[in-house]
Length: 110
Length: 113
Image (cartoon, rainbow over all chains, first blue to last red; front, side, top):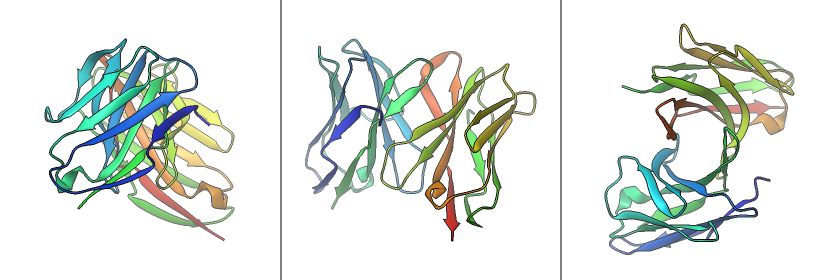
């Protein structure tokens, strides 16, 4: 167990809707990263938050946004959902020289 | 272009047999290389992590090798078990942007009884 939890585990939305995914860890970590993993592919980096500020961003449009809270929990928000947004969304916290991943949220967009 | 390529894409072996998975990368400047195991629908779990100066690292029945000159890595699984059935992902970290890990597409391993 990595101690990283994500909610919900599964989610079904329709095109155009908005979604919020959540991530938290048992112990406080000040760096959290979010990834999108399409079926059969490796995870793609969305962005990273460090001490509540965005610290880096991958090749994702602005409708993907995030928040990190003082208790180091984090949210990923996606607006105007598209069919291609269907994927497993992973958050990861930084340990010493490695990342610990949560179990992911499976998002299906119909 | 920074890329990580893995082979084979999928592999089926019998329980108790050994297998080797390959990873080639073009990431520069190189910081470290990691192998993760990912069960279906779950988050990746770290198996090994190697820096430039390390050329082999073991974790139980898993042994990873790294050749930084040829930019190749392998993951060897010994005496496979049914629970080894998963995707194995090679991940490379860049020295100049530690937050941006570059993931391979993974090798999907199926161990049959």
